[in-house]
Amino acid sequence: MQIKFRNKHLEKCYIKYDKAVKEFGEQVARKYIQRISIIKETENLDVLKNLPGLGCHPLTGNRQGQFAIKLTGFNRLIFTLEGDQLQIVCIEEVSKHYDD
Image 1 (cartoon, one colour):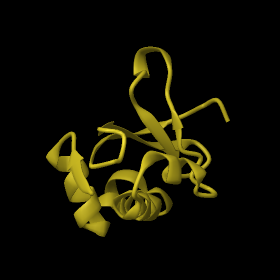
Image 2 (tube, rainbow, N blue to C red):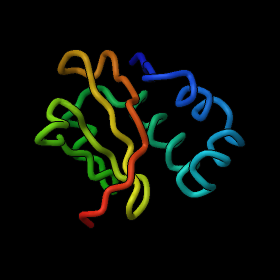
Image 3 (cartoon, one colour):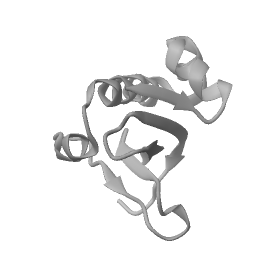
């Protein structure tokens, strides 16, 4: 599994925990790094969707083609993928989701 990041800032937040904490806060930072590590170890999208607690789901509307994974109550990790088998995942952003 290859992980790409939309920008260097997101990549640095994955590599350096203290940078992620500064950007997102401790709880979201921990989940951000953890969730990306889970994605790296997952063999395909169906397996990822069925992992308990992640709430992985496709987005709709102007975000069609993107997927979200729950980080905390309001925070989501947004990603896109190339191919069905999660060969390449691009981490797009961490966003607040208010429909919970």
